[in-house]
Length: 440
Image 1 (spheres, rainbow, N blue to C red):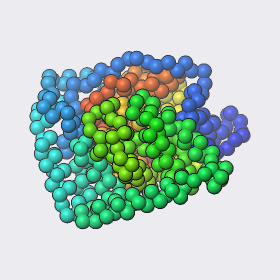
Image 2 (cartoon, one colour):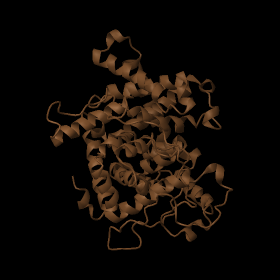
Image 3 (cartoon, one colour):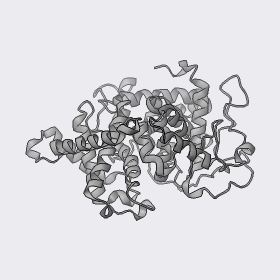
């Protein structure tokens, strides 16, 4: 059940009361209710102009796109992409590198030339008797070849051990343990559940059909049943948080990645009928354990009042103020609280904000960050928001709410996502040695 904000009474002029009221409103929005206030929620259809190149860092950070290996990047990058923020006031003594992107000429040259080299590096790393996780994280940050994702994600999350000779035995044991948990907690009559557990199971059953509604595959009854088993079992075994709406979204990247080991072709053509019961059980178990490992480092994001998320929202506000003061000032003048849009971003880790075909690429970076992910999420969210800095500064409160609720990312491809990640990496590199501006 979704955690509520603290504090029920108080004057509307009281800042703490307003903050908690905003939190409750946003949490209510995640349940499917409309956004608080008299706001028309109509989808904007403005396409975003795609950049002409994919930004890379000095470490050649880019996604290996399995189906595009033969394509070449053509043309010169003008640097005048829609809504870029390169014209903003610099935020450090350096006046030329803060908000500018890497040189396009150098990046376009041979953009696909090192795909095979990167695959070789991944293959060599996975072939070791014991994988060096730091090296694997460094490689994975830039994107993992899709067919390698299942094994690499298990390793990055610590679900599969680095030692190759122990790996199969550990996975077998953990998958059996999951089956036992399902039998103990899920496959029982309601008469053996508490009232709270019944309510929680019903809420999960309501939320499963709402999970990634734009992707037909997730409407498959068997997928929804698997999702329900995973979520309920996780919630029962994590009583400090229980089930919080939004966690259902976090299971979906794992489902897609681990299903891809057993189902070929495009996700639109997948059928659960092609899987054995053992396959389904193993996939569920892998999702369950990977979700558990993933959330271990951010437990207070999903406990009562979700203090971890509130903390990240505050840090995002501070970071945006440092990077883009004009936008920060405009948002404040219009009376828009960061909590009103960024809460969902952090709660669902941007899964609802970007096209689903980009989610697994985004999560390559998430998992590569490991324990540092909560900190880096602030920079990713700042980069994401500032993609539309110029646009947002021209909107009033209601227009900003509508725009942020229906961001024009439908037509995004990998290069737009890489731009967001590259800016986040740049800002994090700049500020990590002077984090006082983000102090709690």
